[in-house]
Image 1: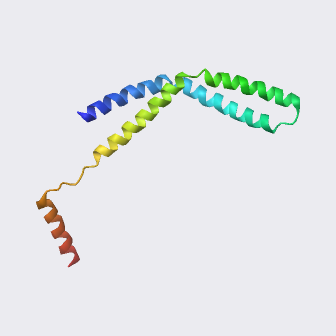
Image 2: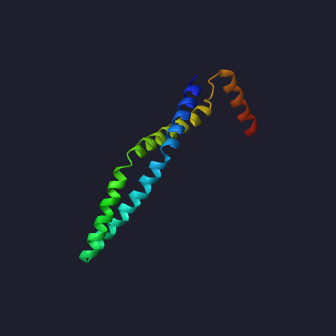
Image 3: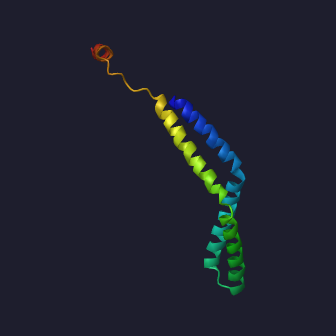
Length: 114
């Protein structure tokens, strides 16, 4: 039952990620432009260059802030990551505390050492 819920939730989150792929790409591109424009703005000495880079940084910041739907896609990606981790955790079967299987395992270890 838990695997069915995880699978259904994973499919829904994957659809959300695909639906918000465009805004996520736009967010990445505009964030990179803003980062480099701001970085160069802080290094620039000339006033004209500072004004030009400041305008570019403001435009990139507005573009970054306009990609709000990308945050929904990022949250969906984080959810997919947690579903993937839980799915892998369930595949690992815990050891059984059956006394007979433990005895057999210990007996085989003793025979290998002799």
